[in-house]
Image (cartoon, rainbow, N blue to C red; front, side, top):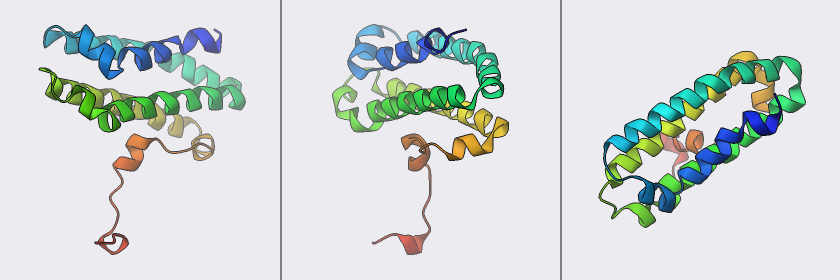
Length: 143
């Protein structure tokens, strides 16, 4: 399987979760459940490819990992950086929850990477979502 075809769902995910696209796509609350089911299915189908790539080539695995990071960071930006663009949407609470769930599911792929090859994961940047979940000790804050 070529990298382009195996990660094609990531490109579609990034495009489809853009706030303007998502807001125009969602017409009822149940649409979020459908999106989440599709995301779960894509991740399930992606895992075997990921396992194979890590065992086959570190360079290929790193390229896939970087693409996951780019998509995760884009979705994090949609959730945090572009929140003003969708906060008045009737489904804004659902959008926020969906973005959080999508990011959490992508983070599980990073955890899988880490189980397969800790060194590989340490060679790439941390995702914006992971950084946002780091709690700094009180003595590190400037307040």
